[in-house]
Length: 161
Image 1 (cartoon, rainbow, N blue to C red):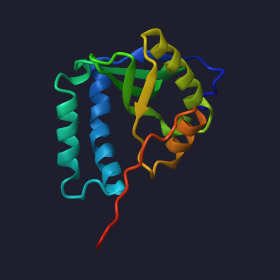
Image 2: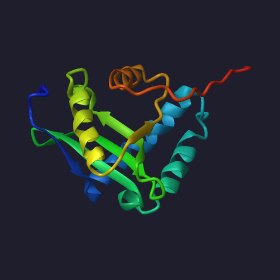
Image 3: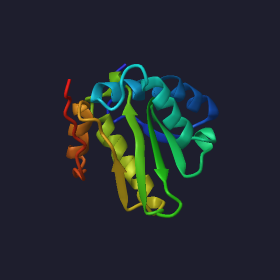
Image 4: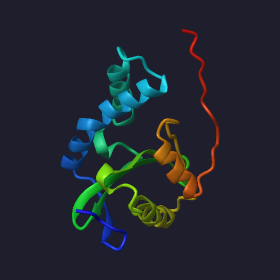
């Protein structure tokens, strides 16, 4: 079924079940993205990704400062949004993951969803949204540029092999 922006898009908090479902694929996807970007080698990727998630989420989705929202369209989950609001700097957040499921992409849903999220963040006093995008994720790079995000730096590498 194709969902358009005219449909009812809502943002809801995660449940424990939502978090367990998310973790079941997110660590592997993060490991693969780091392999593709050259940050991790294949042998260490899963272990390093797991360690990073464990470090960030000591108390699961209830870890201090971490907020998990699910994006729902017509009553079913079509995406997620995970950010951290540092207790020492409440006016800015760092986005760890933002996604719309593939079958719902390129329909304006991500843009519409971000406008809802932006208003929710403003309502809790956030003034700045920061995030990292892997360079190979060209769709996300295009979306964030279209939404008005500015490049704040570059990570570069050169392979000698």
